[in-house]
Image (tube, rainbow, N blue to C red; front, top):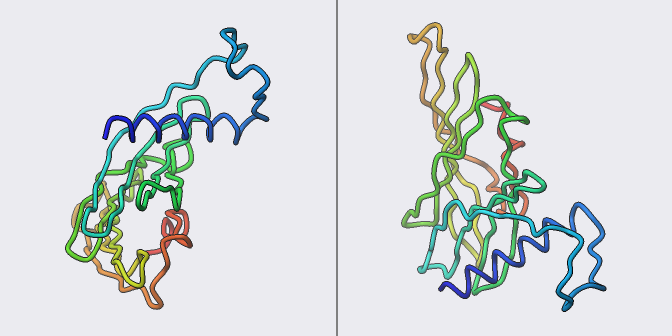
Length: 171
């Protein structure tokens, strides 16, 4: 398990470096490196043994990017970009949880108008699909202006086509 996490961390560091810069491999194997190694933090790991998947929440300090890496049988199949607070006021990824059918990811954002959105993904035909969103919302200056709504997604959205940004302004 530790070896696997180290390997994922190493691959993500390479991804962060290569996505922002052209990666010069001519110095590999030499002791002197001109570029400092990127610090990266694994924030959370959700294991889904029933489906043979792992969701790894990673942060790359150099690029300031946060991603959820989806691994299936020790192979990365998808990277989901997570918004930052610079991109979306008050944004936070609350949690990732296992469900009988798949998993749920909860986010929140907003300044005066607050939103919490729980995204429900179910496993079908060897992949995950977004099929439901539960939305909690209220006005911080008028607490009586509060609602909870469930939104069924038809047609279901395949994980590889999902982005948080597509569901930020929709209620």
